[in-house]
Image (cartoon, rainbow, N blue to C red; front, side):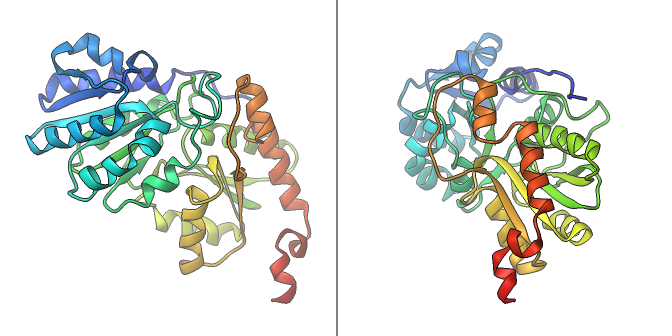
Length: 325
């Protein structure tokens, strides 16, 4: 059964930050001229005197945020992921990460589903880039329940942080009893045949894929990793030990993102077979959401198909290096 529909994380971001700002006078928002798209406009309506329109000048916006942080404010620099990470990377690296300033960078329109903007605005390596920066906290919530708590948790931790926010409404994975903790992964489903590890909104599709697989007689664990940095190494190792086979699935490039982080960790701590599913070293394109998810094999149906194919392969075909082991 599909998960119930939920709100867009960009709306949750605007509402949550506006509420947090009622109790924290340090919070400011800087907008790169896309507030109506990122949810920052919700904050502008609630706190117009604490909203700074920086225009489409993202490097300058990061510099402004850095300066405000040195004055005791907690600025949130908001724009599309491609502009926050790719265009403004030098400013983020030198002015925010190196001095460990309390600036929160909000990457809106994250992932594949960016409202028909196409390959210029889609970015699949922001997780890889941001987790490589020293001191940078990296968080990607799965649904509206987790996003509200994650935003509040990030606000409560001093230092630079990157929060990935998606555009489209997202299914609801977690109930009202869920508690988000920075740096902690959470098992959302148990199974013996393999461990599927995902992050962000993609976890909702992976969970639905696991339900499809269950109807085919395949039981998998689904480990959700909302904090990519610092990675919950204990949870990842424990999940790998339980099944002996790990498959990472992410709405990111398979190069350097969550899959890279998991492979690095397990290579050092508990070597097991690891397969990485995601976007395969290419740029994106415009198209309807459902068709894009199917083409890039990120929909629940395509994830289930690919996981089943991997699990039904003989081990020496799934992992050719095993032949010479």
